[in-house]
Image (cartoon, helix red, strand yellow):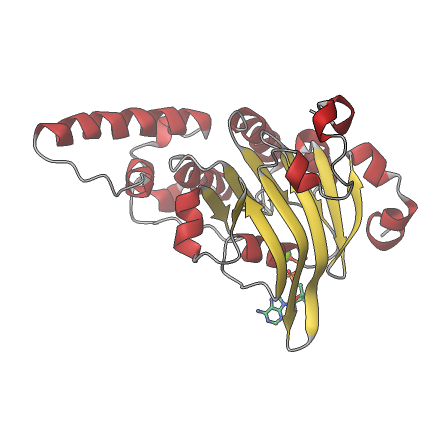
Length: 265
Ligand code: ADP
Ligand code: MG
């Protein structure tokens, strides 16, 4: 996995081009966006492994949400590259990026209040495969099984027939994660998923994220340091649009630069 055990044939490859040497799920390189000359994201590079939970932390205005906006295609990069499974995303539309397997949850949940939990999950099931006659029946069964499986994962199996408006704030957040999971993204991006949740809900959300990473990676923006410790494989710290520090939570937490701009107050 690491450079030390690469076959010797590759050892002549110049250093500093990690994306060529390793199968990252996501490789962000020299990513920059300016809004009227203000660089909200300024020369940001980071690499996410398959099955990794990466957390992005940083003070308000650091550019965290903008990084997710760039990856999901909502904002177009001024320069730099975003490669997902080797495919350049900066040239793709938002819907093509979803099709490629990137799911993104925004800060405010976008669920349908007047539909049940079951129906919310059902409408999120990927379409596109046209089916007729007897096949429709088979598909219905497949969808139903998948909805039950997801409902179990997001702690809502007893709420399937409940209208979404009656769910607690935390349950609504889980439902939205479920609506993304049913599309089976290989990269799932969550912007402050535990904001407004109770301590108990935060612990369950950490459990949930640790459960769903088989076969996928999760990129999370979060402020709650206890939650970050519970989930992060690695942490990337953004500050004023740049990467300030990166590594294990332990390493980042003890980095004097991070303490000064972020954790110190
Ligand atoms: P964070 O999520 O880390 O709090 P954001 O990514 O939301 O920060 O914002 C980073 C900076 O970019 C902020 O100063 C914000 O005002 C600015 N910004 C974000 N989006 C836009 C936009 N569409 N147009 C102009 N400025 C923006
Ligand atoms: Mg934000």
